[in-house]
Image (tube, rainbow, N blue to C red; front, side, top):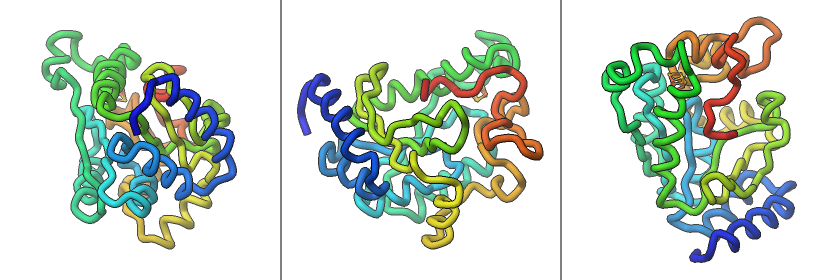
Length: 233
Ligand code: SF4
């Protein structure tokens, strides 16, 4: 589809209303029909649920992965397994600076001293650059993940990037995800079997296993007050 950003903003607002009760497949079908190749899915490779859903309605869909240089080996392995076994086109985005170059410029372990700046350099900027060729992108955000995600719309206007942003499984619960994974044999990051419930970068200050009774994202930037990397703000 071609159109102005005003067209897309109106489209997103209307779709957010009309698709609120739709299934993830229906939401993704709408995006594929509306945007074609200018639509992509982003994945942290915690699991391949949204990539699997998208490939079922749009085989060959672009799946965008941000390689921050700080990932667990299991996450890179999940990315490679997705690329090798699923009908998707995995695209890996990388930051402008390598970890060594960032250490030289900003000092070592920026993630411990200023995680907002580290995420801005290693996640937000590369994603914004990588999404340049798309009009719409889908994420795996869910309302039940944390209080900060409780109002996530299924389709909305991403004003910061001037793109349509989808959260096709926003209404799903963890039980819905588990049922879909089990029914379809969807690839999962093996760290999920080790007690991690939200998997980001490997420094302990960025990802730890949650404690008893904590919400699923409690182990992200634990103790810093930071709850999001900046991509979804
Ligand atoms: S999650 Fe941690 S290591 Fe990864 S980009 Fe953000 S601060 Fe840096």
